[in-house]
Image: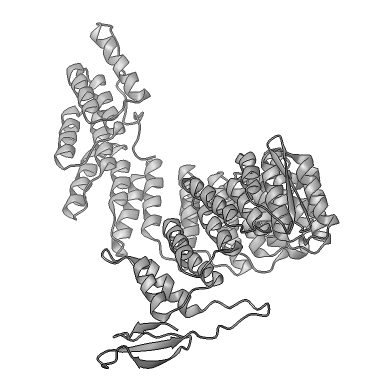
Length: 591
């Protein structure tokens, strides 16, 4: 029994402690308290259960970020105050709760210094796992921990081996062998046989578990050791190991990495026979494998085999994955299967399919899908309409835009600012100035305030269709409304004035741009350089080129092309420039 000073502040614990107040000296001037260690609850094996109050309190102390206090000193005071020594299970739980590998390592060393405490295999495994996840920076610390383990006579177990294999992975298998040989296993013997750069592990007296096999199969698969990882998988089956979804996915991934398509289908069929339900990762393995091998048509075999497990979520995942990979036909075929087999649709799948069709320029199919999704209980929204509007605009299918826009308004959906911007840009692209202006005015009437993109689209439309005065008026209007023109606004106007042979106005806008703190980009410089070159202002063009480099911009192929034309002019080579219209831009800032 040890005596400690009576604490002046109270602490709350969920573990009950008992004690008695005693005199600290014969005069009675000081008091002390004698605390009896509590009886620790134990599990069925007789091991003491972790005291959650102790674990939580210690973890909070270690996580404290006070610049003046040392958490380890506070922890020492905490343990000494209650006259307790943490158990190995409690130390393991505290390690798990600590933030950061450095603090975890500090606490691991601290625990080893506590009187009466000795690390066991489980605490060593915990710190090895923490350091292993922290990266190569802690390789030396891992080696030191293993040396301590060997020096203290602590025997590793199968979890230790699994952790070590996970740490070094397939890239340093010889090192894995070296690390494991540092441990002495009296309970069982582990034989590591290095096969070129591959690893094969057999355990005697204590069988490797499914996790060990899974790690080895993954490593050997990455190394291309097909015979070895197939042999390990067959060994798992012979020894009666449980084949769960993780094991099957690992095996399928290894086969996919080694282009063993038929073998992957065979393993998948056995997976179905054993009633193991595939997940999204399983399907992704087949999608990427078949795409790489040019056999995506066989994806239907996978879907047919797993038909009883398929739901809308899986179909949606397949549609999205195929869409992202650019396989439009396959994504559409999978979407049609989902459409046929389910009464209700999946919004994510519909959105993904719509995006894919629009990106591929299949606007007819996209409009048809948009019209039919209501039949599957999905309400078309503004985002969906905007996708189709954008695709139609890029293909200059303005008649379809008219029809679809009216359908959208009839359905009760209100256009968003993105809708208006897309429409203005689309009408401007085909020279429908009046229609673009009409949409802009409708936007203002509906209390949808135009943003800088709205003005840029309208200015681009007006300027490149010969309405320079109106474009400049809109430019001043946006400034009056508190919108600051950006590099696209200035570049558009500079190009419009330059192509209309109003070089002075173009240069004035460029100077204004700099004065307003709007930094030109290489497109802006190329536009003005082209205008100066075509108007014969060679000296001004060279001066502008020097300014370009001073601002840290790198000339591109268009810049060099303009400079070549300038060089030919300076050598008195006669060039005839045709008077171009308002079309034929250098690089349009608005596509």
